[in-house]
Each structure stands twice: as C-alpha cells, then as structure tokens.
Length: 598
Image 1 (cartoon, one colour):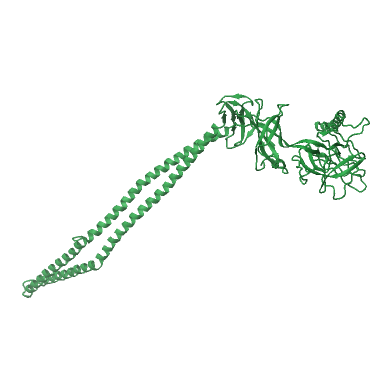
Image 2 (image 1 turned 135 degrees about the horizontal axis):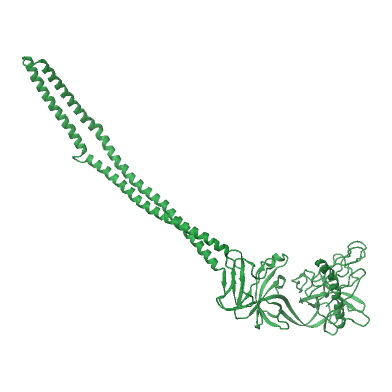
C-alpha cells in the first residue's frame, strides 16, 4: 500500500519541480521578451575556464590506529564502546563472542592430558626396551663365548678329543692284557686237562674267557677307529657351527634390539609431536580467547570502521554485528591531519596525477572550502568495485588535506574538485550544445529564424562546458538540443552526446557514452510515425539519460528518454554573461516537453 502511495506521488513531485524550475528561469531572465517566447540555446562565451574533475569521498585520519578482529573465524560483537567517546590507554573498547572457543579450550585440555599420558607411556616403553636389549645382547654374547670355549676345550691339547682318544687306546690296551691273560690261562688249563689234573669243564671255561677277551679287544679297536674316522670329525664340525651360530645370534640380537628401539623411538617421537601440537592448539586457543577483548593501545577518540564489501557498504558497526577475521572494527585517529579517500573512474586516470591541487568541501562543514593535494592514485582497479557494477572500473585515490580543521572527523563525506588546468581566453559552450553525428562533432547555431548546422572541433571539457577550438564564434547562439524538425539521415546520426571517440572530450565517468548531451530524436518505429520527441530524462552536470528512441506508435505519442531533452543541471550563460538556468520549451506534436534546466 505504501509503495502505491509513493508511486502516485511521483507525477505530482515532477509537476511541482517543473513549475518551480520554470518560475525560477523566468525570474533569472531566461525569457527573451514578455510575449512568452523562450530561448532555445545559449551564447558562445569567451573567457577563462577551469578544467577539473569532481569526485566524492570520505575523510580518514592520515595517521590512525586500527583495531581489528584477530579471531580466526567470523564472530559477533558483544560489547562496543560508543562512537566518538574519548578513551584512555588500556580501556576496553570491544568484546567479541568467544564462548565456543572456551568450550573448545576445555576439550583441548583433555587432548593435552591424553597426549601427555601417551608420551609418558612411550618414554617408559623405550627405557624398558633398552634394558631388555642389554639383557638379550649379553645372553647372546655369553652363548657365543660358551660355544667358543666348547670348541677350544675339544681341540686343545689334553682336551676332550685327546681324552677320548686316550680312553679308546686304554680300552684296547686293557683288552689286550685280558686277552693275553686268557690265552695263558687257556694254555695252562689245557696242559692240566691233558694230564688229567683238571676237568674238561675248566678248559671250556678258559676257552670262553679267551674268546671274550678277543671280542673285547676287537670292540675297543673298532671304537677307536670309529672315533677317529667319524665321531671326531662330527663333533668338531658341531662345535665349530655352534660358534658361528652364536656369532650370528649376537648380530641378530643387536639388529632386533635396534629395530625395537627404532619402533619405540618413532612412537615416542610421534607422542611428543602430538603433545606439542595439542599444546600449541591449547596455547593458540588461549591466545584467541584473550583477543576476544580489544583494548585501546593509546588514548584517543573512538571511530567506527566502515565495512566494505564487494556489494558496497555493509552493516554499520554495532553490538550484535558479525565481523570476520582481520576486519577493522575501530580506528583511533592520531594527531597529524586528515586525508580524503575517493574512487576515480577509469576515464579520469589520464587527467589526474599526484601533486595536483584540489578544493575539498565537507558536507558536515557547509560553506567552507579546504585545500588538498592528490598524493596517491592506485595502479590497479579496486577489486571490490567491479562486483557492484561489472561495467565500471574505479581506482582508489588519496587526497591529503592541506588546511584541515579540528572539526573534521573520520568518516565525514566530502566533495572533491581536482584542479586539472585553468584555461584562459577560450571559447566554450555547455556540453549539451555539442552532438556526435557519425564521425562529425556538430552544433546548431540559430541566426534570426535560420538554423545552421556547424561542424566543430572541441578541446578539453569539464562536467559542464566544452572548449570550442574551431567552428563557432563568440556570441553566436547555440541550441541546447537538436531542432524539433531535425531528421538525421540514415547512418549519419550517432549516439546523441559526446563519447570517447571525440577528440579532446572526456567521457563522463558516471554515465553512459551518451551522457554529454543530445536530444531524444530518432527514427520512427513504424512507417508513418512521427519522430520521437525529446524525453524527460533528467541530465545531471556529467550527463545521463538514455538516447531517445522513436515514437512508440503512429503519431509518436511519447518520445524516448533523451539527453538534451532532459533537464540540464548546468549553469548556462545569458546574454549578459551571468549564469542562469534555462528551460527550452520547444514542443513537437505528440512529444513530451523538452525538459527543464534548473
């Protein structure tokens, strides 16, 4: 409902503005006579002309302390000191929400304790393994020593082998003695039996004893031979291999000990790294929690930082507003003057240079003009600007205030006029008097009742006027729009107004290429339709509005939105040379009023 009310009020407001503009124009002498005829143009003037580049910006302290969020995540402002308040050094100026971090701190302390316990366990396991390795290595070395001793005992003179060989020879010697004794006994018994001094049974016993002694000797000799040929060799090789095995066991034990220590060392190092990492996380959390409270490092006045984003300005700083990491929250200006930060359109770069003087008007300090100097122009366009308008490129610039006052505050809006050059004794006309038709720059000169189309050469221009280098003379009356009966030939009329294709005329950085002026004339949309009349679009000093189109239907009831036909917010000189606001009232059948000039 409110939207419909606002829509219904728009025509009323436009009518009031038109009436007021017409009344003002009449009081300022725009009407040529008392019969109601109106001037359709302005006179070509000769004089001094200032070429300047107007921009808007905001004041900032030249030297200030920026307090920003150092939390590594987006958070919310819980407390924020009032803007403009004077604070002392060390005073709390902002508090951020760190409740979630405090909860994480408790969990992290548990992680640190677990990591500490794991490290203690790993260290003790390593120490135990070191002791076990010493034991295993000592046992392996002892087994090697025993094997070597066994071999030495077997091989040494008067050793085991010598003893075994001596035993075998002793057994053979005993067996021989027994055999010799048995043979003597048998012979003696045999003699006794033959003489019948002993029974035959005794001879049989003596024969059995002799046979047993013979077998026993053969067994002893056989045992000696087997020991020498087989058992000695086998035993020697067994003892030698036992020594080699013991040596290999020592090496294996040493390698196993190193491997076990390496595993435990890796576990101990991993546990130490985990503990260090968890401790660092805890320290970082504690540090982050401490950064949730921001204190003033110096005494001064609190100024809220302006949020900037790809889509323009964000929410103003206040309690409950979310802020991201490294985002400025508060600035505390230091003594040392002010600077104005502005954005230059890309078409202004070739005109604006560091060192140029400026006139600065602060909105909060009306009626005062301050001096400034361009101290910096960015080399690359603002990365945030293209998102809000992909067709526009702006470059950040900095203007240093030469004669600032204590009443200036950071964040104040200001209008800046960058002084490019001052031209003396030149001809100039309003930019709305010059049109681009094909490859020609033309103006329409009215002499008595005749209208003459002139091809002109233009030079430098500012937001209101353009220098005429050739084609016009001082005092000639130049129309502010094309004649109502003007019919461009096909292919002749280009976009109404000035653009970059014209020599010496800068394109308007804040409008379309047709900003410099022109009427809304065009070709009929259908056969037999009247040309579209000038539109009602309001044209600001830098231009604006869209080229006029043809009539919407036969008869051309409504013309397109045009430049020259819109109101021209430019000071047009009167015949007496004083700036006036003109209102051309040329009408065509079926066309809207030519517009207003304030």
